[in-house]
Structure formats: C-alpha cells, structure tokens
Length: 244
Image (tube, rainbow, N blue to C red; front, side, top):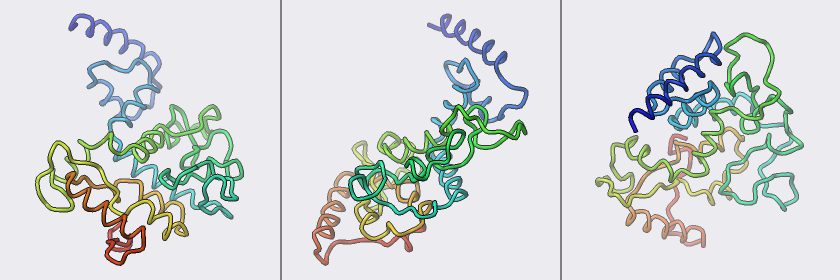
C-alpha cells in the first residue's frame, strides 16, 4: 500500500505542478501536500482545502453574502407560497440568487452572489479582471452550503470548537452527543424572516450551532415543542442575546 501511495502521489504532484498557475494560494498548496493522497489538479486542491475547513468556509460565505446584500424586492418565501423560491422547507437556508428573478448570471456564485474567479476562488488573485463564466459557485460556498445543510456531519469539529463540553449542561460531551440549532429554525421562520438575508444565514452557520448531550437535546426539543404549540413554558433565546 505504501509503495502504491508513493507512486500515486508522485504522479499527482507532477500533474499538480504542471497545471498550477504561477500565483496559487499558499494555504491551499500546503494543505494539498499534506494529504495522504495529493490532489492531482489545482481545482481539486482548492475543493479539498475548503472541505477540510468548513468553519472558515462558513465565515467567508456569510461575509460574501453580506457584501452582496439582500436583493431589492426579495423576501424569504417557500416554494408554493406565491413566491419564486426554490426551497420547500424553512430548514433549508434561504438563497435568493438561486432564484431566476434574482440570479446574477454566469460567473457569479449562486449561493453568495459574488463574482467567481479562476479555480472557483472568491478573489481575483491573478488580476485578470474577468470572472470565470463557466463557474456558478465558489468552492468555499459549496463547502459552507454543505455545512449549513448537514451540520451533523461535522460533529467532531464542533465538539473540539466548544472544548468538548455540552453547551446546555456544561458536562463533558459523550459519544452520543448531537448537533443542535441553538435558536430553532422554526422560530427563525416565524419571527426572524424579515431580517436581511445575510443576517439570516447566521442561523444555519457556526454562530447558531452547538453540540449537546442527547439527554439535554431531548429536553430542549420538548421545550421547543411546547413553544411551537404556544405553551408559555417554551424557552427561546432571541438572536439579539446570542451574539449572532
């Protein structure tokens, strides 16, 4: 296996060097060379880098969305509710530039709305002065979207982020600990959907994610169910108090 990997990495490194532009992000190259199997192309190296750093991708994607701002005339609506939204559930992050009425066209990211440059990068490192019209998303935004939609896939990363302590009880996290949205998404849909679109994304991102032990998660879900049913004992922490 070692001989096979060494030979494969030798060939991949040759391909990577031949295809790599003169200007290339240093952290991406360092990450690629540290992989057990070196990515053979610059594009795959960029994608591998952002997959390995979903928290960075989350921060960057939300910052790019803030730079784009909320499209004029857009409101958060679900498919079939009289709008043009593609989302069928409030559990999916709103993405106005994915909607035909607010699309910015080829060469712009369908997640954040900002221009896409060579290799799916978010900045014109090569000073070419033109977008990549064959691309419809940033590599970072793709990683962020996956992080927003499937946060449970990153439970180990989130555990390390909070010192392996349960956010609800302060106890040590067990193997059965689960990822939770601190402010439940049904509350976001009910009470926060008038907020600017870039601010809404924080409810799916790292600021609103926590890892809690299963028992604490069950109790929290019971309180949220009570709040959803209109009982006064349902607990809810407004976003303004949570640092989103």
